Image 1: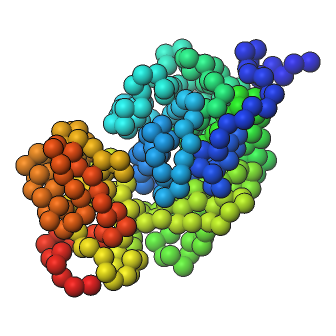
Image 2 (image 1 turned 90 degrees about the horizontal axis):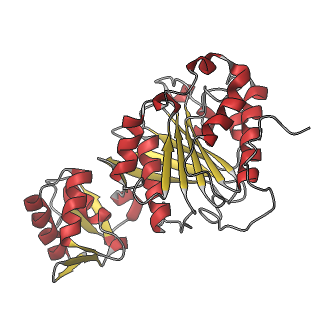
Image 3 (image 1 turned 180 degrees about the horizontal axis):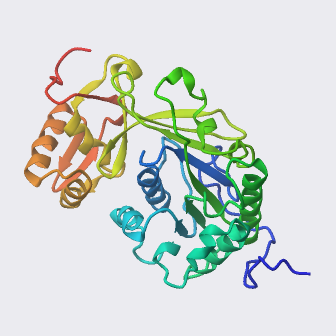
Length: 345
């Protein structure tokens, strides 16, 4: 007898090769978790990562492979919130990405929210609402999966495992890679009373980590010692890594201190550094850069050109006939505005 929860138009389960989203970190066809406290910036970070996958750009210094499409299933707020992030990166342009939120769908039966027994069929129903339908080689983002799609308490390992099993089956059926955004549980102010590993702070059962592939985490800044977000991943078959990022408007930029990079680096004031890091590796027209820094960073044209001149004088960019390109990417360290970039380090 056919599984009644499997849609009739589900793709074949025959294998089809697609490249890994991040080789050695995230394998194709897997189920992966990105966890962090509510409001820490998970959706903002992942929206930027989706744009980097689309454009073939690196993520945290690792090469990426472009998926065939992106499907974003949002469940915790109305579309205005997540849509704003996706539109910032032009992800909903030209049909490459598709977005669905049951909260915005008048045909969605909201009583299902109160029926845990219908959690997995509800997930399948939401996937069927994507137009166009999910295609092989795509990324599916579920933001977040709990509590709507957990068939019971998210503190019950069997219920969490049932959801993750279903997601693994869906990944195989549709030949896609799945990313689940999840919330940390409430954390005590005393750091000594917290779990040492951030992936162990996911709200609910440890099955979130045990039954998923790569676990990723995002931790709030804790100034003055840690004035940056910590983002890390724990792959199954590679060494874990942690990265320091600063949130600048709608993007996250690498945080480098003198302790990180040592001596002999070019010191760039923070505002100029924000501009420096959003310049693509291949360079960009200054007219296009104007639009980017105004939209993402709120920096005016006059301020942009003042800091471009400073970056040019420091020798870390080149400008020629309306085009700007970085030339010393690995030699730059950020210092606070007002601290002289000429100060010895």
